[in-house]
Image (cartoon, rainbow, N blue to C red; front, side, top):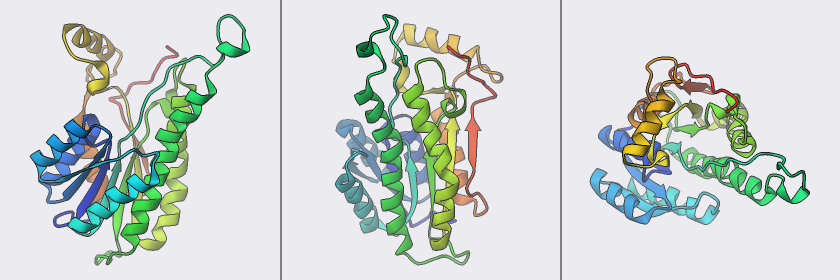
Length: 258
């Protein structure tokens, strides 16, 4: 699929995986809507790549629609990459055996609302817009890349909510791809492993921590780079025969219980 002269929406696009993907899409001729909650970073990145920033909370359907409509105002919408998400760490049962110390249910619901329901909301809105466009010679109208995590398969202690949300993304990839085949839209999912993003912080302490984490990776023994995620996302968007797949990007790591 040719991205040149099309538009794209990247959620979580102001930093990390999303920012790297937004830059690469722009380099390949797409007009990019950077959809994120981080106004300062989002505005700066959009200016850098010649795109547009739209303040977007993926739990807010109206804001998702605004991001999609903004993209449509730039060029035909061909691409959606969903990178917005958050983590969570809490054990299912507290050490004191009290009901009140069990995993906070509101936290569990919020993690799923952002990571899983928010992703699906972006897909249903963007795919609806894509379906209105003209198909190319292959019958394609667009392609979508979702972001899960190796935690969908190797969830660690305390990751019940996070793993459930990411496992849900993996689980919906095939049925959504089947749904969207009717309008010529492909769907694939990336399961990143340990990727070097701002969640690890900055400074000597953060670098030492990341180096230790990297020793648990099979090969190469380092954290992944956001740019490595972006190149896989780009391949999934451009390769006409890439559909309904969930691909680990983890350098062979298999997460231990803790």
